[in-house]
Image 1 (tube, rainbow, N blue to C red):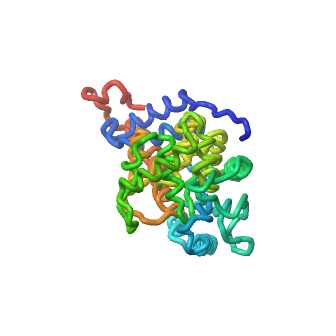
Image 2 (cartoon, one colour; image 1 turned 60 degrees about the vertical axis):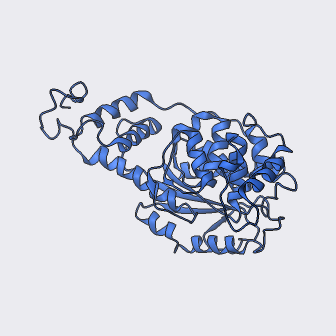
Image 3 (cartoon, rainbow, N blue to C red; image 1 turned 135 degrees about the horizontal axis):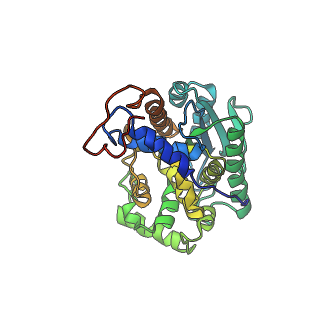
Length: 354
């Protein structure tokens, strides 16, 4: 993996932004997360009052366990999903249009060929990741290539002037990789990450088998790239590279589901500073996602009971980022509105009529 440096947030800009937020015509601290988002964006963009940022959406596509017994569709479902995304008629595209955000769909590891699919960027490293129950999901070489795809896409979007990105995924059996990565990084009991489904095995039986499988690799959160290579997937690897590349290029990234969350766990284990540049979005009932949020110590902003990937939850979260900037720039301070500031109460030391 390439060498990189993530610069810290600009604390001076954040303090100046916080002072403006505190002096907006509202009870101090009353807009909670919107205030925190705006202040962090100031630190990311090195500007005291960020405004009119350019949004983007990127979806990395890859299939998991293509050599496993559960692969009955041979990637056809994923192909239909990226074809819909590429056509511009997806739910993701509809939501992105409201934010003037271009949707980029990147094939990094789909089983099916996408060379002739309109609107899909073909960066394919391999035709899917292998089933980690048989052997490592990827070779070191394919993992590194997938990481580089993510890094390069972050640089490409930054060069196009994009400043905030909604991140998403497409791919069959992606949750299997997310489960394994999450178990290895968090070290949570497997039973905490599983749910009942149509499988004939009980949760306890599934947990025992998966735990035994992962134990063969002797995975440790101290070696995140080893975890990624053995039980991850190509699109998760690309998203790891994208998180890191986005932080290097000072892009804000909104993530949503368990798959984008698994990539964040790996990126954070590689460099904790990446967390300064990411924003959570939707809450999911899925236990892997819940475990990730618990481990990261964060709470999603939104709940839609979404059951689809394709960055839809992230795009909805990007609208919250957009709302934070409208708060910062469309509201007036006490001084601008010539309103008397609080002389007592919690705002009396921060609200000075500016």
